[in-house]
Amino acid sequence: MKVYGLGILGCGDFTRIQSPVLQQSRRMRVAAVYDPSEAAARTAAERFGARAMGSAEALIGDPGVEIVVVYTPPFTHRELVEKAVAAGKRVITTKPLAPNVPDARAIAAATKDGRCLVVYKRTGNAQHHALKKLFASGEVGALALYRHDWVHHYPYWVPWALDPEKNGGPLVDAMIHNLNAVRDLAGPVAAATYHGYSLTHAGWKVRDTELLVVDFASGATAHLFITWAADLAIYDPKANDRERMDVQYMVGSKGHLVRFETRDGRPVVSASREGRVVLWPVEPLPETLYDRYVEDLEQDRPLECTAQDACRDIEILHAALASPGHRVPLALGS
Image (cartoon, rainbow, N blue to C red; front, side, top):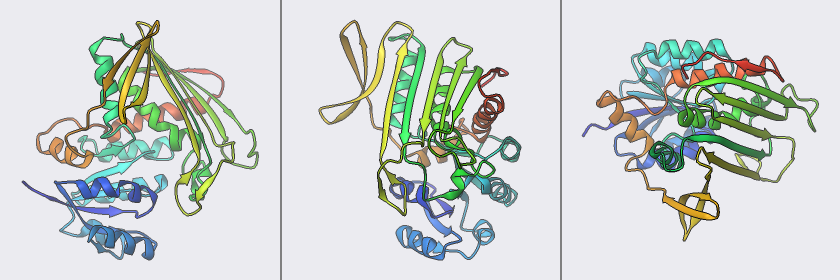
């Protein structure tokens, strides 16, 4: 069984979050890391037993690196992905794919073979797999309504998150996870409507509160709301450790209210209708998202989420952002 050498560009918060999953991988070994912060690179190198490289170019050019992981800020993705692809490397990156449509399309074009994996919360997520299986079964009908509200303290540890030229604001930075997830459940998007507000942070270049209503060709709708207006608790001023509130539920076309719950210490999907509750278990996935990526490559299977799919998220969001308060029709096909 081949084990692939992994090179990580960016040793910040997301790499820290992904570290346990990377260390569980049977098919990948972190061979090298790079970060402009020598201290961050050194910490990551020690964590993974890897080499700290002196530059992104040195890591990409290293013969021991077969897959390049781009876990850097979104405004750096295009250059790094294009360099990795030019060097003949496979690529994994994360959301948002890019801060704007031209860069997102350039990344999609550079990885047009569909072999670039983009990591969202739904990627390698057992809850999402259980939910997708439930709606595919028809037991609660098709997805009719997807609702998610996020109340987060703004990302104080990364100032670029508030720069629309580098990131894009709350929807693009965070709620894009849910846009991608509901698209995977509901299919092609027919239209989107955006509402944005500056409630408490009037000096920001981005709105602190945003709502996106997404209508699907299937007749389903998604209401995605996020606010950074509330200054909630900060638990660790140097990392993504902050107070947050999440409210999520779905409605099936047969009238069931669908939610994630914990019963007897185990995650389940619950569906209630007229007082009757049915539970579906959330089964652990047999492999990490990194092992699945390798096996998808080896068996020439479609990836969980490609750069082309992630590019569509950026296109949908920016089309809606350009016409606030208006229902913007979108070309079908995603």
